[in-house]
Image 1: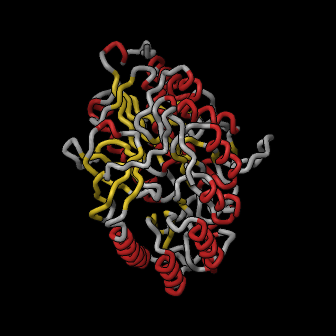
Image 2: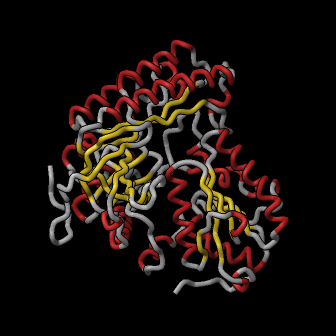
Length: 470
């Protein structure tokens, strides 16, 4: 049975939790953990913020716009708190780690501030806030225990067939524009045994695909006594667990080894997809960014990946308007995008982040120039994506069914190909969690539409174990 905290809130009926995430997949993962932990204490998720007893905001400070969203969101909560003084407001993530107790001083209606390593303690800290009327800022220097023990006890319900698993946190690269090392800390990897154990527990809950997370997963293993590389970890997950699909993000080009690239050809259950940020097509800007590779080196990595797996799905991050970026630098970025033709591209305008060396650089690019360059880049990428999606029409793709389409009337399912493309098709609910073969007959900007062929090449054998495929 769930443990319901003996608090004033608990004695007034059901407890409702409203969770909102700003930022990356790492934040989505932490938000899921927070929801699961509080769910074990009786807090039910709600999409109606006015119904909430607890509001959990997970934050990002990688870009100025994301941090501005946090302050705006917190400002809007002031009225809710005035109308309902019993409401508890929690802020977690990078902005919480960056500002700490200062957030409590800026926002008098805020109750709890959790650093990037504090999610496992959210349950006990929330009880302190409610029962003692404390306002707390908790920013531990190391990751706290608690998540795996809840999984082991069966106190968590894992929604869906895809689940993220953190394998490492932090970053040692210190790109000149990036605040991550300042808020997430230096690189630290989890023991492989703990990762394998978590994946085993997730598969028992029905998870069929795991997304391995880290600020730089390629450098996994540094500092671990077992001396394991990321490629070796992938092989262990592939050989020692029954998970159907494996993905990972994010990678750094300087750490993309030949052995890791080879894993895409050698491990059948490793999805043919990689997220490999390049940030700029200009070598001069890349040096200023401290990215440790050239545009030619980046393109050679893509060529190698495609030689190993011609069907490789590619996504990346790119930035416009870095200090000193000329029109020629921007043109080189556009040329790289046109040459590689990414399946998906996350594009941003540069913004100063506190504590980074780039924030001290001269020759800042005017906002209107950054906006124009970003719009031009995004238009190019949209054309490429639509063109690549249309090229899928008539072909067949293996799709892992994740659930109902958001646009459906109740019988349209949705899933993803190995290349991370969204595919919608008609089918019964009992297909959720299965691999099915879908023939694509229409393409849109963000998804594909198809129909099940009825000739699924299922990777599970009769014993429920993955088949070995090439």
